[in-house]
Image (cartoon, rainbow, N blue to C red; front, side, top):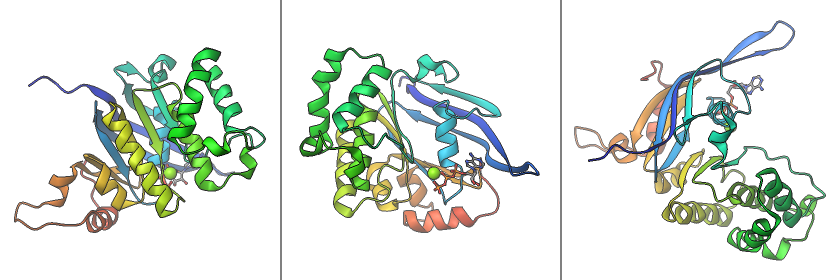
Length: 255
Ligand SMILES: Nc1ncnc2c1ncn2[C@@H]1O[C@H](COP(=O)(O)OP(=O)(O)OP(=O)(O)O)[C@@H](O)[C@H]1O
Ligand SMILES: [Mg+2]
């Protein structure tokens, strides 16, 4: 069998923040390693403050890691070329509220170095894909949370990237919005895209992901194929929720 192609290879990444007047240390990520193969849907799980967003931001070069190495699509993440083929949905997207989705996609398209023609060609299909055709020319300040999440997804998909990194794509959405995003993730994956996403919505993770990693206090405490993690050698089975709670409360990391 040929070696799997690694789209993401994160090794021993560390990040410590210093906060406040006394420069108190917050060890947000403490030696996290994981890799995502081409064609996978990979879930990054962990309780609030576990280090998921920090890990994803270091991968996107939005904050610098203190140590470790990150390869994206076979290139070192310190080179901006490694991110050419990646779409990123931040946890909190701050879009200019007076822009419409059409204007926002124009703006990001130019930022991605796309020609006006290719932006125009993609725009309407993309807005249709995320269900925003009717609101295409409405300013974002009139958008609901779910609609903004859809704009964020359209932005992440604009340059037709091979790898999507989505930080809580279903957060704050109603059940219909969640199903919409989950179905979109499946469709994108079927069309060949590799997807790494963080989430707290374990039912969606269970439905979508082939493999997951669970972080706790900046360390990886579990990783593997969902079916392997949830089925034990003695024949018993566990739900993802039970595994999550157990691992999130465990003391010793299994890195
Ligand atoms: N810019 C920052 N300055 C200082 N501390 C930070 C900063 N960003 C994150 N942290 C700290 O790093 C730790 C990890 O935060 P992070 O946002 O990565 O967690 P998370 O797993 O994404 O949590 P959530 O599920 O709530 O989104 C937390 O203790 C957080 O307070
Ligand atoms: Mg987060």
